[in-house]
Amino acid sequence: MAFWVSPAGTLAILAIGWLVIRGVKRLFKRHWPAQINTWDVMAPLFFVAAMILIPLGAGQIFPWLVIGWMLIGIGVTLLQAIHNKELLYTTFFRTFWRLTDLYWVAGFAVCFLLVIS
View 1 (cartoon, helix red, strand yellow):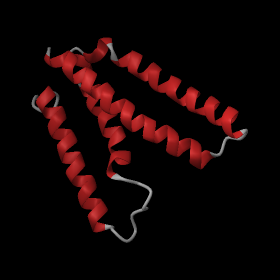
View 2 (tube, rainbow, N blue to C red):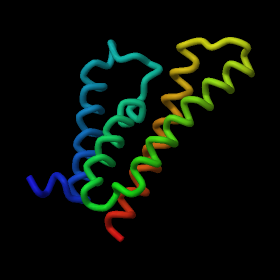
View 3 (cartoon, rainbow, N blue to C red):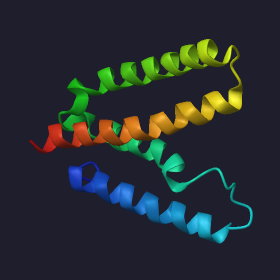
């Protein structure tokens, strides 16, 4: 149990998650939505992996990462409302989720580096 909450364990969780998602995508090739790639499904895993690192020292930065994630949502909402003069759920959610992918990859990297340093 101690391995899974260590920094190496979180990397193993991410690697196993990547393999499972790729396997499911390959298994359901015909029924898998073409717009969804593997990174889109990995965002919750990066969030959970960053949460696992909280007791090891990432608790200092994690609340700020969540606040930043909320600000991304507010920013995407405002930009789409001002630029497009409307807010469509599909375009909002796709844009927000793609930014979420990038944000939590960087957020996990910061938490991971904070823990191992």
